[in-house]
Every structure is written in C-alpha cells, then in structure tokens.
Length: 346
Image (cartoon, rainbow, N blue to C red):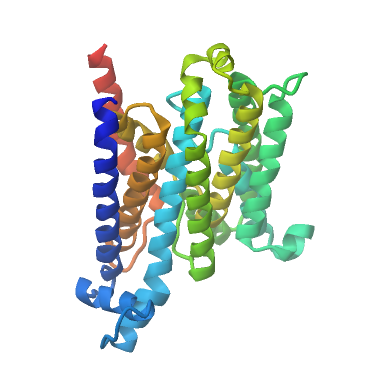
C-alpha cells in the first residue's frame, strides 16, 4: 500500500472534523451573531439530544434560516467536486469541470426564460419555478450534447463530447444574451446576473435535504465505481483489456455526473471553480486512486463552499455577494499557483 493511500483515511477524518466545526461556526455568523455554544444547543434540542434553554430568536435564526443554507452549500460543494473529479478522469482533461456538458448553460436558458419572460409567457415552463425551469433546461442541454456526441455504434468519445458541450454552451449563451438585451428590463438583468453567479440564499429545508441526498448518493455511486474509473487513466484500450466495458461505463458516468450537476445548478445557479480546483488539490494528498480521491473531494468541496457562502453573506454589511464571485476570487489565484507549480516540476 502506498504512503498516499495510508494518509488518505487520516486526511478524510480530519477534513470531516473541519467540516463539522465549519458548519457550527458558520451557523453563528451573520447579521445577528450567535455563540457556537448556543448554536450547538439549538441543534441538539431540535434533534432531541437533550433539554436546552434556547431563545426563540436563536432557534429561528439557526434552525430555520441558516442551517438549511449551510447544509445546502456543503452539499453543492461536495457534489460539484466529485463530479469534477470524475469528469477529469473520464476525459483525461485537467480542465474538465462539472459544467463540461453544457449543463450550466442549459440551466441558464430555462431559468432566464422564466425570469425575463415571466411564468405566464413560457407555456409548460409557466407552471415551474426558476428552479424547475433550470432543471428542465439542464436536462435538455444534456440530451442535445449526448445526441451530438454519440457515435454510429453508440460509443461516446471524450473529444466529441467536449466539443458538443462547447457548442451547446455557446448556443445557450447566445440565447440568454439576446433574451436579456431584447427584454430591456434592468431588474430582470440584475436577477439573471445573481442567478448565473450562484447563490444558496433561497434554500429551505426541503430543497437543502434534496441537495444533500443528491450529493451523498452521487458520491457513494461514483465511489462504488472507483476501480473501473482508475482503469481509464491507462486509456480505453488498456481499460478494455482489464475487463472494463468502456462505452457503457462512459455513458453511465457522463449521464450520472450530468444529472447530479443539473440538480445542483437548478437550485444554486452556476458556482465556478469548485469542481475544477478541488480535485487537483485533493490529488496532491491522495494520488489518482478514486476510492480515496472521491470521498475526500466531497469533504473538501463541502468545506470550501460553506466558507465561501459564509464570506458571501458576511463580508459586506447589509449586502450579499454571489457565492460564485467568492469561489472565483479564491480559485483563480490557486489554480494559477497550481499551474506554475506543475510547470516547475517538469
């Protein structure tokens, strides 16, 4: 067993502890500061872990307002990180991220259509909220990408898939830009900008729990295929010689990562850099073996987005910054450092 494989369980345990502490601290930060001890008391009381004396205001702020948001942020960070790690390995492309298949652009088409035109003007989408429209748009974009990328025998080439994703993303981007410009509605443009930059501000318990379920199931399912994912590192021919059904597995993983990403984007908008940067960071600790890489990526991604969202809602008094802005500000210099480090290592 390699030294990295031995380090991975300890790193996962430490990161899980950091995530718990981060959640507790984040729940206490905001316009109304609440001590961590009171945060723990509120959560323990709600979970029937004892009798605690907590004020109704603290209970409302921690349990009803902040906890769904923090849990949702953790789930989105975990899900995007795992999907990014899977797609980078699947396509053997270091720049692959969860939005590789045009998912975010398709979601933007649905969401922006509802935001700009209103629910009464968009037919079937009229019965859906922005979230529902975003999910339908994401799934529609996925269907088009897979249709364009599939070969004559049903094979799914990584290169063709990436090109199809770029094509669909460009078409969706053109539609969104034209719709905003033609509407002439500055308020709608502001809401579109907020959505496209990402936010978990509107999450409540039902949506937060759904995101947690999606992130956990996605992480467990992809980790169960870790051994077969490892085989892709040696190329398709070598993977087939190891008994991997390459085409079937690629379809399964492409569709699986797209569905997870579509669910996350529909609720949180486009949050960049998490799925791109976190897998690279984690590989420096675990190496390329997915059985260690995927769970630790989920934990690190969760920690990163919990703190990014906390900064987004606390760094400026009386104003909230889109969480995608924070992740970009953190991710850009880190990725530049990573590229420089790799160049010097060669």
